[in-house]
Image (cartoon, rainbow, N blue to C red; front, side, top):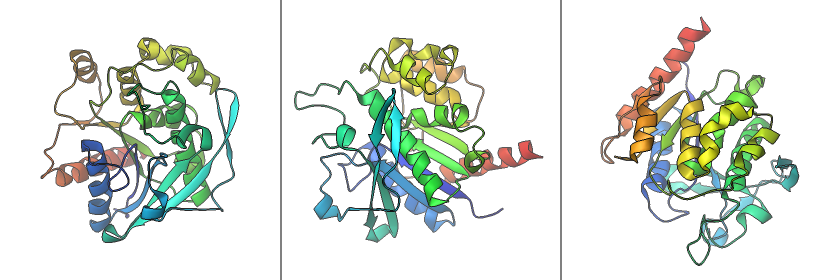
Length: 275
C-alpha cells in the first residue's frame, strides 16, 4: 500500500490552546501517524487568544489572499503556520479578521456562545480545503475533530464531489460531546443552501444546535470515531441508525493502533470500490 496521506483538521490543538480531550488527541495523533509512515498535514483555526509571538506563528504569503464566500459575503483568507519542534510537525492556521481575531475561541467574556459560530465553522472548513488545493497536496483521508469541523464532510460530498483534487478522498469524523446543547443561528440551513446544498439534505439542522451539526457531519462522513465515552440519548440513537464504519471509544493511553487500523479499513474499502 502506498504511503497514505492524512489531513488532520481540528478546532483545538495543544500547545496552542489548553489541554482538552480534542486538543490532546489532535496533537498526539498526527505525530504518531507520521512516525508510522503516514504523510500528514495539520490545520486549526487561528483564534485570537493564541499567542503568535510565543508560538512563532508567521503568515504564509503564497497561500494567503483568497476570498471565501460565506452567506453571500466575501471574507479574506489568511494562512499562518507554526512548528511543534518536539513532534517535527507543522500546523497551518486558518485566519480572518472578522471571524478569528477576537480574544476567545467559541464564547465571549460572559461565556455566551458566539452567534456566528456556524459561519466560523463554514469559513474554517472551506479555508482548509482551498488551502490544501493551493498546496497541491491530495489527502487520502481527512480526519476531522470537533464540531467546528462538522461542515467538512458535507462540503466534500456536496460541493467538492467532482473536484479532481478530492475525488478519492475519504473523510472521517471524530464526534465529541463538547457543546452539544449550544444553539447556533437558525438561518444555518439557508447558509448551506446558498452553497448549493439541497435543503432536503439538511433536515437534521432544523434544531439549530451543535448536536445537529454533529449529526450532519456523521451523515456525510465515510467513517465515524466515537471521541467521547457517551453522548445524549438522541445522538446515540442517531449513531446506531448509521450504516457506516464506526470506531468505538478508545482510552487515551491505547488508541493509536485502533485508529491506524480504522484508517486502513477505510482506505481498503475505497480501493475495493475503485475496482
